Image (tube, rainbow, N blue to C red; front, side, top):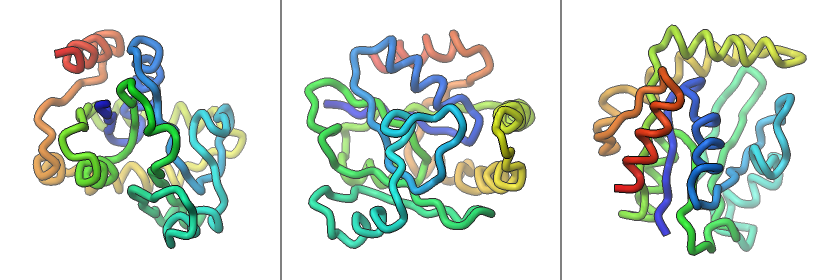
Length: 191
């Protein structure tokens, strides 16, 4: 099993590309765990496995039978939100596994799974990313503009050129034309 790991700054199109690849490739997809509140249109167990802070803390402290592979907590304007990869039944598959996350989570996964990871780094010009993020927030009942701005600024540090190089990311995919980007990713995976 290989792990196809999609990453990129917020509003780069990771989720959209993830869902298209999930339909076009013969893969299973991994649903990450989070304490973040569910957004409008998201589905429990499909978008994320939404769990309580208490449940997440049990994973972090090793009090659960399932192993925590990696976790990271972000101090948002709404309080701390934790995201985690937990070694559950989703990893027991013959098929390749499709995942999405951050550069930080990719690095931790690389330590755990070694050569089994195929990095897919999505790039979009910052102005276009900001437009996409605003459009998404406008669809929410209670838009969280401050959090959008915090994430946008944090991405500059998290996905700095230095961090991308340090992670060993060599191939980048420009998500300006979605179909072209997806086709390039599929060609890359199938090499």
